Every structure is written in structure tokens, then in C-alpha cells.
Length: 206
Figure 1 (spheres, rainbow, N blue to C red):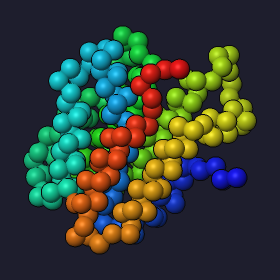
Figure 2 (figure 1 turned 45 degrees about the vertical axis):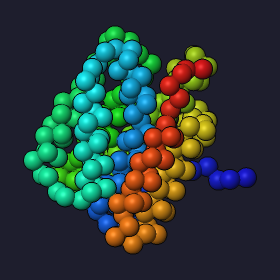
Figure 3 (figure 1 turned 60 degrees about the horizontal axis):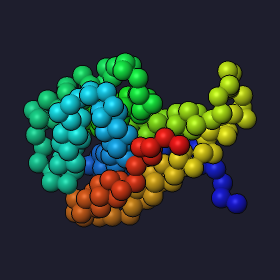
């Protein structure tokens, strides 16, 4: 039986120290990318961020990683856009509110890391992807749970969506740790394309 994965901030931070900062940014960007379909669903339901500014902000992160040519001014501008989008409105109602909140935060943390404003930004971005999957697991639980027990928490942690996200994070980290820095741009492109096909959440509620 495969052991259940858990999000370990301290262990992840330690593992990240073994790869280059640009590779760390690629890892965080992939986690944020997997949240974008849920964010798109939220946008469709609420008409929030109608011009899809969060997508543009994340594309700025990918450009920085895939074609390294630091543009501090643009990074700062996109950070400010993403940060402003973190004020996700609770109304009109959408089941994807929490995921949208996690997506905006994840992209903002990616940009903060690239700007040198938050050395823990990569860990924070990855944790938001895990949080989104965990929240969905809670949402899909039979109604009536008022106070979560240890058993409830373990049940939500074992949910396939949570385990899938944690497995993908481990895989991405392993891929990035095994490459030579000159090949980072190619590997980052692979991570981006893969993340686009592996959303953290389904966009249709069961």
C-alpha cells in the first residue's frame, strides 16, 4: 500500500535549497498553473477579473523562468496586479471561491519570490495548491460535519485530489533537481505544459 503523502513545509523548504532559484520559481509556477482552470471557472461564474489579469501575471512568471531576462519593473507591475486580485469577492456565490483565493495567492507568491521579497514564496505557493485540493475534499464530504475530528482530517488528506497534487509536486521537484541549469528553460516548458493538463481540481462539481 502506498504511504499517504503529507505537505511538509520544513522538508519542502530544505529540498528547495538544493535547486537554483529559477528552478524553484518554475516549481511554484507549476503549482499555480494547476489552479488556473478552477480560477477560470470562478471568473466565468462571477465575472471577476473579466480581462484575465491573473493569467497575464502568471505568464510573466513563466517568461522569466523560460527565457531568463530579468525585467524587474514588469515583475513588480504584475505582482501589484496579482496582489490586488487577492481581494476575491465572496459574492456572487461560487463553489470555486476558495480555489480562486488560492490561485491569486499562489501567483502573487511566485512573483514575490522572483522579486526577492519573500524567500518562502515558493513554499507558500505550493501550499496554496494543496489547500485548494484539501478544501475541495472537505466540500465533497457528506454535509453535517460541524467539528472536524482527527479521522475527518485524515480522510480529507487521503482524498485523491490532495494526494494527486502532492504527488505532482514531488515529481516536479525531482525533475528540477535532476537537471543541469542550462536545461532549465526546456524543463520549465515541460512543467508548464504538463501543469496545463493536470488541474488540481475538476471544474465540474460532482
